[in-house]
Image (cartoon, rainbow, N blue to C red; front, side, top):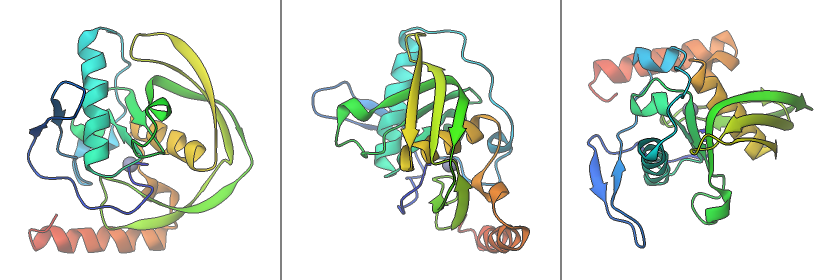
Length: 195
Ligand SMILES: [Zn+2]
């Protein structure tokens, strides 16, 4: 989600090549977990729009599908770049694949409080207030500027991913009580070598 707007299992720990029908073998990146400082720093603007960037975006889609997420931001695969991919159909509709380079919210409307999760914070979810509709402006993998409007889950995914590019995690939108509870649990998991 939102990396993980829907519940899923943590990604595998090692990068592997996963051949997909009808396309080149894709690199499946391991997902960086909460605690890695790269998740809490703003990414650098994407400036180079070339074949390498298109490959990276496709590898990000493959990595996101492998982790059963609906959105993935470059910092989550260890790259501090303002690049994210979103597909709220989970790969069912190729037309739903959205590459967001240097995205920004230009309009937001309404409010929806829904449960949200994150591929980088597996196993934890919380209610986050997000706009019901957002319009964002971004560039695609070729560098072409476009605007897109999202509603509900798609709006939430846009906001969640743009947050990632600003070094913000959904935990920051939770109450301090809930946030601290999750942080304590993660600390415990880390001590047990399970994070
Ligand atoms: Zn996330």
